[in-house]
Figure 1: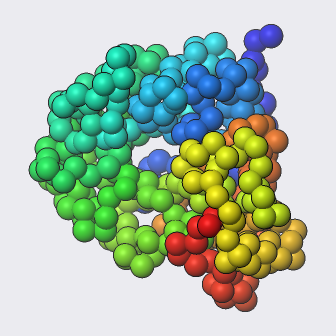
Figure 2: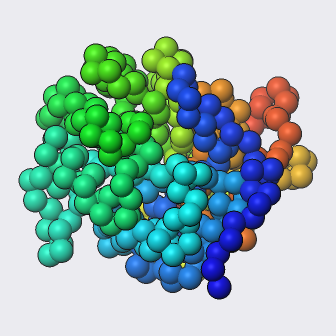
Figure 3: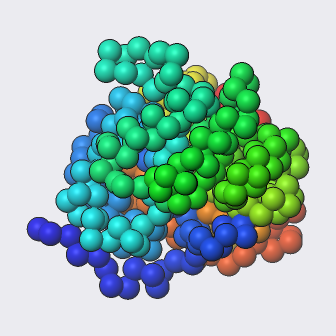
Length: 341
């Protein structure tokens, strides 16, 4: 049956301006990192993406290497776009990235398939556009800094993408505070502002606070969209009973290593869960409310393996702001570096 979007889709969420740009993003955005490769049913992917759009989640974030295999998340999204979302293209913000290794059809990573050279970024951009069936990306990122390529070359490639009409805005991901300042300066000289930064940030990973990135974003006029706000599932109830369930990332060895769950982790999750329950929230919802309290955080990227999980996380956007007392109580348990074991 042909998809028809919910005509009330903008009533359920709020949209935040990205830095000093004219772009606005929903408070939570949908990331296609882990659950949109060829190892997941396309029907499930379609249901999640279409439900997200019906909720007003207008931003879909991808990267060239998302899968598995690398590239498949873009290809699968391209199929859903062609079949269902093409009439709504002007209502969507679609982003992609290049920087991590992108294996070819033989599984090999050559000298032009990772990092930040002009050759890699622009050829990867063309390949990503082909896989998704798009004429342009709304945002195109350098996915990680390249220690061997001058930042002028990497940022020059991003500016070229804008000048060629293949990207409307550009961003960086995983860049340090000092690298962010340098990237913004180069882009400014090229007449293309740095619009957005995509760092990792959660209650258990607070490096952007300690490294001073947030005030720097204000200085350069950029917003941010944070990834892993649930710390790869550590800030959910998935492991709260002290066991590793089948099908979890820890059980699969994807991003989390299996092993005995530590008492330190369980104590911190128990404390945070108690705070969440007093607010009428799940732990995941509290974790999202916590990262979104920062004015420099434009949006939080959430993944989802089911529509139910998507809807549960989306409820965080409806929560009351954290009080000063709640923020102080969270500080006892929101400790940088907390691990499953």
